[in-house]
Length: 120
Image (cartoon, rainbow, N blue to C red):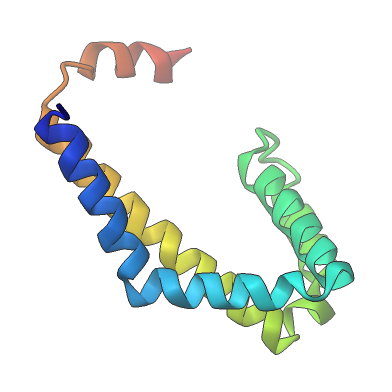
């Protein structure tokens, strides 16, 4: 027999899958998959964007951001790419909001640990 947490987790997954945000994301994702070359370029953009946002090198961040913007300017003008990235952002934001609400409601005692981590 499944416990309530598992039952409601599966229900939440169904609700997410039934949402317009997720349906839009899946549709544009499937369209992008039809063009492997464009999909590869988008994935390269996403990887480099992640590395740019998470690098610890803040001294050259402005220059690297300017170079990154120039490098991907044409790609980002493609309506299919713009739509994919917009839909991906929307689903990510929805998942972040869900996760944030769940984590906040659990009241884990992490303040001291978090402070120690940020001071490292």
